Length: 293
Image 1 (cartoon, helix red, strand yellow):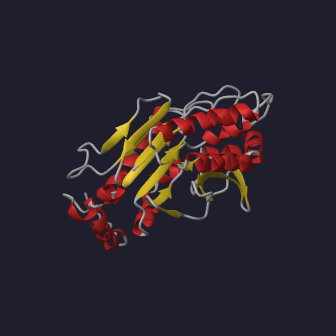
Image 2 (cartoon, one colour):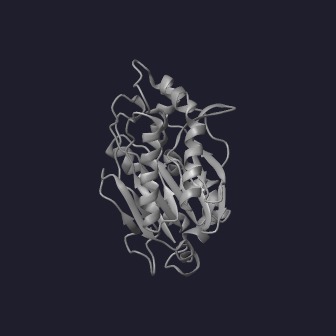
Image 3 (cartoon, helix red, strand yellow):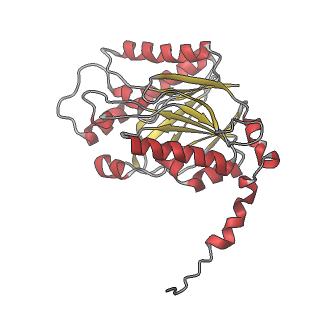
């Protein structure tokens, strides 16, 4: 199958029609290249609120509310595009309202009309402080004709037990939309993606949002490169990189992938990180402290 992952920069639009035309152009381009799963980045959905006159003096919390007001329409737009072009789409994440408060949500849309979502499980310090973001509560797997797909929004991929739980339940690939302002954050997420690919011997797909975006405090900066990672092993790229774009270069990275071939390294690879994971358990639960001089 072919998967397309984006480095995407939100822009302002005069009206809703212009926004929809832009998104359709992106989806159409990837679909024409044969992509069957399309991945947009964390905070890419902030663009849903970047329509019409630009608000003056709106702080981060005000922006979060403004974006949440547009969440349903954003999901509907991507649902239409997924059906129209016959593709699976992970829409750019955005703020949405949940019983616990405003969450950071990525909608996942199918060509048959399915709509579901994943909420960020661990908000960053900035998200907690600036917009009082609520934490997601459910780690989900989506069972598709192309395999079982897990989604981890940015910071979540830095916590390996989330990934482990997904792959133990059969996930063949993990999609990681991200938003990182500076090189340090981008490096943390990128290296975490690569570590998760090694630990779980599975496919990891990374999609970063780019910035800066004028007059939007949620996207003052943004850096990264889209990439697709695997464990470096027999019959797979020896550097663990299936495909990657240039840093801060907007556009699609599209590659032919075989998640089953990648996960086969769990039984036929040079190492057995996935199978040997439980060997940690009794050791991490028993730590001895010794006086030493």
